[in-house]
Image (cartoon, rainbow, N blue to C red; front, top):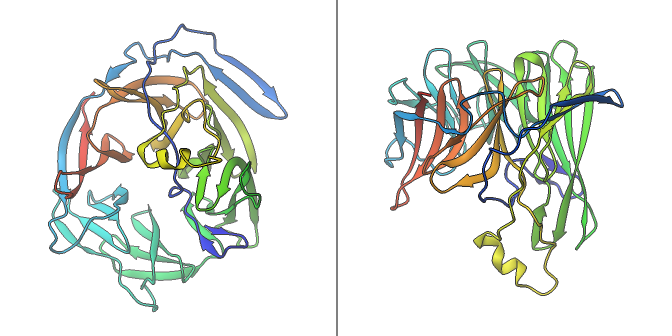
Length: 367
């Protein structure tokens, strides 16, 4: 993502955000409310989901572990793990597109440095579609299509910073940060969508979120999060500190639904890396509550919402919705690392040992 006027690349997921704390998901039940406002279906769910087994701790079984042994590859900032149709595992990490067998055996780095066909100046993103890999080279503004084993198929130029592809759209993004200093102002988070069947058909969608900037401090007051349902040409977007998900239908060209659930907010606790900032003269504004939504994951046809709720014994609380906004389930996940992604019954977690060794662990969900 490029910030206008600064010629700087910003990634939606890399701005420093604020969060964590403790509460429970069992609040008094309320009735589900639905109405239409300005053509958007508004949904407010009760605090208790439909599942009778809600609030349980999800049982996990370690399936495979990818460990940085310092030999053929390295792990620094692993991201975007995917399970390919052939069962192999793909993982992005600093200009590496690492491929592993279903058993975790290293098969190779599919990212070839260079400026020629099938080569990358800087690998930024990738998706798997129809048994092929589409990977984005940021400086070259091109998509490289390759087979699962890395064999080059073709290159394609793109105009905007590539984020993902859906069935009918190539989706790029841009952040315009506010110019004002020392106050909370709206940042503009834009999606630029180009039709895959007609490159002249383009659509732009803008979401607003508060941002604070007084250099050297820059804080995204409102988290900007999204997850794509590629098959349905839909983006799920969260862009405020309080609980809320908007459904952006790329084919209809508008937000069609907004949903949230009654949520007991978590008091804000200053994280260690922000304490010095708040001890300065004229510190930035301090929120009363944590951001309710910490991350979004698409798991099959279900949207997982990681909340700010943490329990020392149970772990982090995850809510589950369908695309209609029905609050289906909630459960706790207790892992010692950070969740990278979810795929089917697989949960990818980044773990760091005491000596700093990084591993990506694939857990199978057994309940």
